[in-house]
Length: 379
Image 1 (cartoon, one colour):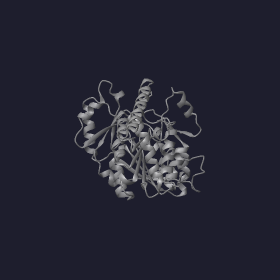
Image 2 (spheres, rainbow, N blue to C red; image 1 turned 90 degrees about the vertical axis):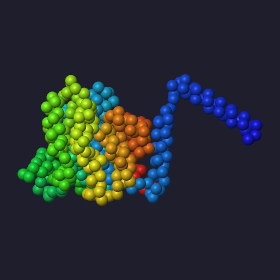
Image 3 (cartoon, helix red, strand yellow; image 1 turned 120 degrees about the horizontal axis):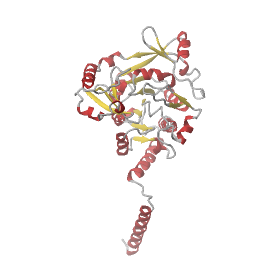
Image 4 (cartoon, one colour; image 1 turned 60 degrees about the horizontal axis):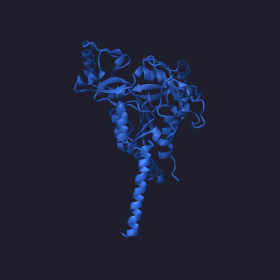
């Protein structure tokens, strides 16, 4: 190199170094993670949009419910109070633990648009089955519903019009065979719906008996009896393949100590600050793998599936899917995992910096992103 070129290079280095010092002095440091995340998102978005042949083919979209489609605004927050008053938001019934969330009509519409693109849509949650049933009239219609951290699977079966009246009036009920009858959420704004919206039809839930038989629930309930004998307070109401342990019900003990007592056939994950215990054969990853392989026959988790999620009990499935999207982050473990895998675990505020995590807007942002980047016709 010439002396003149070297001088210019040295001068440029000095200028860059001075700029860096100024940033540090003014507390404007940008972390490597933040910069890499933004760069990765931009590069990835451009790659998806470049041509239809370069972006992955998504066959199934899995979604958690609480903290993902349904949110729980804090009554002490002025900003979230305004969101609660939004006429676009629907209030769900209060759960058995006293929680009452909101879901937006836009969220329900966007989920329906996914299904209109011949994509399977599956709700997979750690919640008890009775709570899931209670919420069905307020949730997007799905091709399958998985409760109790994947321990149970239900498929909707379309009924004739004779059952519609009672289902709509009662919002859901059990028939003489103890099958649950329901109508999915009715959306007032139906401009994006098909001519006869699926939300206005009536369905019966049929449980997947083959999957149910694969769950080792005998050892699960033997362990529950053991814990009760050790003076642990358990929550098993409405569960059949899982039970939950609340810290508030066991104030003298640390619920994480349960992890050291688990039999080989069982696992435990945190969910909404509680500890869920269930068979190893269950779990969100295993149930979704079963659906992809045996029911939908639609590609693989790693190549053709997306997961919307937020918590510790979602990490195993999130790591197995092509992409995972986070409308909120409900645990330190998920936060750490997202930071270490920001190229495939994408938070809503990485898509839009104006989006606040843990809001219905965050969910809408992600669903719109998925529709635009995986299902629109690239220019």
